[in-house]
Each structure stands twice: as structure tokens, then as C-alpha cells.
Picture 1 (cartoon, rainbow, N blue to C red):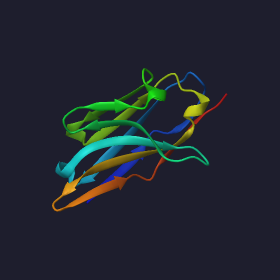
Picture 2: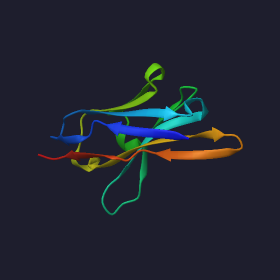
Picture 3: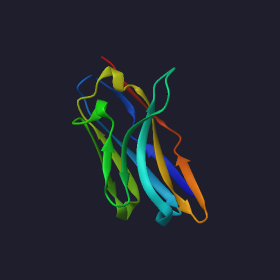
Picture 4: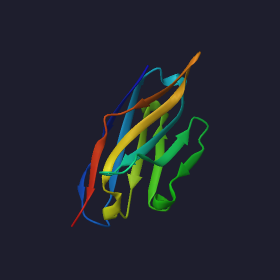
Length: 119
């Protein structure tokens, strides 16, 4: 079992920056990938960025060049650095971890953290 705890959301002006953190605990070695998703009111939850255990990274087109996902293996923590924030980035951001504890795969979620971009 994997537990995820997010932090770092808040209110920021357009053009500003925030850094989200996601600390993982539990069966850390079973994680294959960790990522960030977001969900705006009335919309589906969409992928923002993902980093695999092998270091591969993918971003949603809407955040490329503005957001950076990274990880600190010693702290079992994944970060999302968000720069040049826009009002359309406003959403609840969720941390996600996927992996396998044989023979069962898992898909763990954090509680979510609100990011609001507004003047």
C-alpha cells in the first residue's frame, strides 16, 4: 500500500509560481511511476506530468515549458514546479502513484491540493 500526501497549493497571481510536493510512504519500491493530475470544476481529471522510475518524463502540451516535474528519491518525494501560471491552471491538483505489488497493480491518489490563479 502507498500513501501520498500533497502540499504547496495556494492562491497566486497570473505569471506567478508555485511548487507542489508529494511525499510517498509505504511500499515505495513497488512504484513504477508518479505524476500529477488536475481537475477543474465541471471537468475531468487530466494528466499534467508524469515521471517514471526510470526517469522518463511526459507533460501535457498545455504545461510544457512552464511546469517541471522532479523527484528526490532520498525523500520519496515528487515535486511540480509551476511557473508562468495562468488562470486556466486553476484546479485541484492530485498526486498519483502507480505500480505493482505482485500480483496486483495499484493506483494511489493523494487528497488533492487547490491551486488558484487569479488577479
